[in-house]
Image (cartoon, rainbow, N blue to C red; front, side):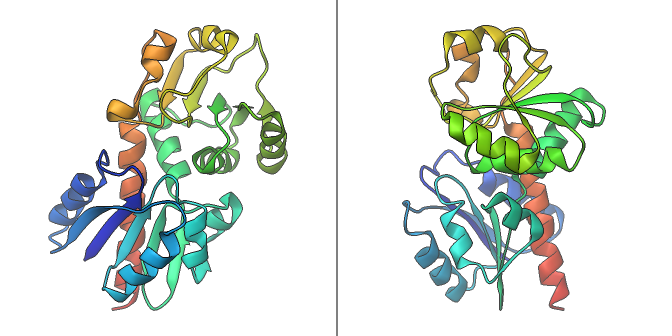
Length: 243
């Protein structure tokens, strides 16, 4: 099994180690590499990877939307979100998105209970935010959106049955999908210091939210591990479907 992740930057990625572990546990002979691909090059690179015999590929920033164009088939989650993070490079290129599932599993693991009927705030409006909002909507979660662009907040709320962030009444749990070192309004910082749990989708040195808020923040390692496992299972299911 020949796998990879593409994006820019990519050197920080934990995906090669995670997926090599999955393959070792399953007694699968395979490889997984991290490949730097600049914005605008995703489709060409994915086509070349398919020709070179890659089984599957993960996609990270900033390529999740443009990689859609390389797909012959999109599952329901990818169509709804408008972005993918996982492709099967078979006779047909199949795209899916496991980011939202990874976020939900991570939150439920931290809370040690289902996320249904909880109030969860999402910071950001990009591909990861959309994936999380789509997953939480299907699990009966009350979601609240904060982003710098007010029109994007309105669009996301209409698309995923969410509500705009309400100043002075923050949700109990917050997941940030903002880029590292994003600028936050002072009023938002004060609110985030008071919520029960804050999780950052970034991990490692890219998880800078704790410093910005001056409080404990859960980095995105558990979210990454859960979505990676879902991606690996997606590839396995398609490979087994060919035998």
